[in-house]
Length: 311
Image (cartoon, rainbow, N blue to C red; front, side, top):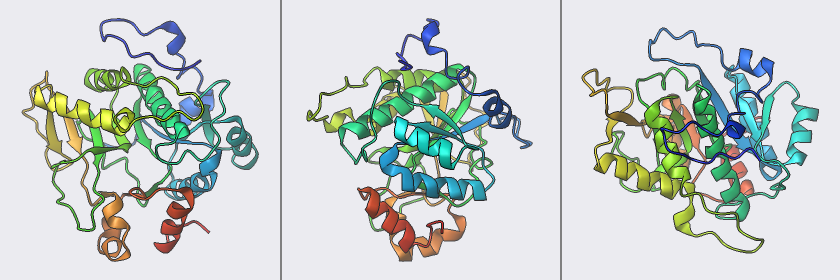
């Protein structure tokens, strides 16, 4: 398989797991990973990664339509052979990468289903593997609608940038005041020691694959483990929490990691899905996460209701 086993930071990664970069085609390496034209000295080559299976193919088509309108380069992680054949037939110009070998996870993968767990954990493994290849990764769920190019906004000196998660009806504060849990469906990780170690520690808690019909627990969700580890890093002062991009923090201690919460309006979640809320902030939204609702069709209906569905 191509899975990653999280290991001690002092140990070299197993050779069998150092294949993510080598398995990208030469075209991918020259078109997706070339340095940005940004003048920021902190800007590094960043790969946009979205993952999908056959069950969410319609959402992927819409996601790619908007990403291509914005002129973005991206890599699609494919979860099953059926969507791989569809991508080759319908979107052969798009670079892809197989998430699994000898696995069939084509069903929709609704929230808390076994396919949901397998895909989201494997996606984080791939992100971690790419970091070892010297690539910074902007990971984004297929139900995150991009309205603007996120690159320049995320070209900060943060080791990790995560999306705040707000599902209430009221507009949240813009500041980095996470009180429940972050959203693991949109995050930027730089190819630096702190980012690698943080993801490695989360992956140590990856649950074993379940047999058909067996359930996963709430505590085994990637997002819950992500939140628990964020709290530990902050609590033990292994990382400082900063606001992005207003706080430059030039006096930051070199040995402390810097984790940043993205602006909750520019990178909006479920609270902004009500038409009135969305209309207020639409001009400044960079990415709108169609979360806090479950089911493929419900997400599609919401995108159409907000006039965000590609014709």
